[in-house]
Image: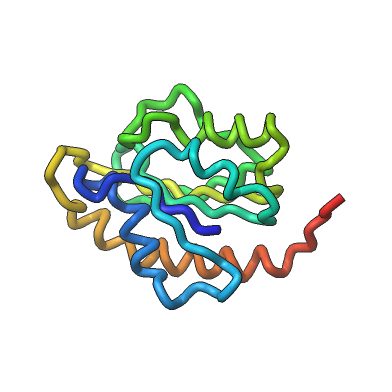
Length: 155
């Protein structure tokens, strides 16, 4: 599953949905693209039985709008106390922690967090973040290819 998180009506928070739209018609048949503009908690049941989850979300600005951070949750955790740039009620870190506690989280979870600049209501993606959409979509497709080559232990 490719999960695009964010609200397209809140500036750079719309990066996740924008990337999922860019991937329309380009994903393998067995990979679903989903947009979540609110709580990701409702999606946890959809994660059960999936080998991998790739999330695209906005990140708080750290100085380089449009910069892409790839986070492999098998190697590191998402920071729970980081300033939120998103409009989600339940954050991705909390939803993943709950899915793991319920034993329904995919074994492989990759997050592409894109630094934003503006999250104002009623605005669109800033030029820097909009320019990163194709690059993020390409990285998601490459990640899908990489994950398909990694053996998955279902036991």
